[in-house]
Each structure stands twice: as structure tokens, then as C-alpha cells.
Length: 115
Image (tube, rainbow, N blue to C red; front, side):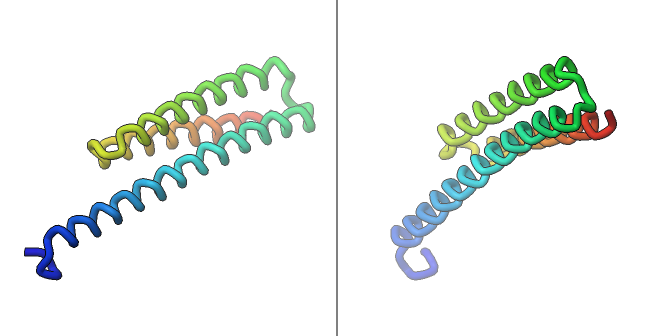
């Protein structure tokens, strides 16, 4: 028996809360992708402005970061499509993809600043 003596109502409320959390999570992840994309663009501009790194050094790094961004976007799309399935496992995979992308952006930033 549910908290309110109405299992159906309680199940509907839990399902609505889970859906809301999924939507919020997807929104946060989309914002993370957008922020990382902005950071990649800033890194390219910073390298060009400082002229510390040649275009040949910047271009491969930016290309690699954009490829990783594409991978992160694809995984985000998969997470959205499969949200009703194994949510915890799926979200761990998305978090791992974002962490890999963040690490690559951080390393690119360090390389540009050291040059």
C-alpha cells in the first residue's frame, strides 16, 4: 500500500518526478556540451591572438576536440533516446564521455598557455 493509500496515484507521482529528473539531466548535459564547444572556440581564438602556437599546432588540436565533442553529442543523443532503460548505467557512460572531453580541453588549454 502506498503512502496515501493509493498505489496508482503514488506510482503516477513517482513516474512524473522521474520524467522531470530525466528532462533536467538532459538539459544540463546539453548545456555542458554547449559550454565545452564555446571553450574549444575560445582556445582557438586565444591561440590565434597570442600567436604563440602556429596554425599547424592549433588546427589538429581543434579538430580532435571537435571530434570528441561530436562523440559526446552522439552519446547524449543515445542517453536521451534510452532514458527509460538502464538510467544509472547510461548516465555513467555520459558522465565518462564528458570527463574525457573536459580532460582533452584542459590539456589543449595547457598546451596553448605553455607555448
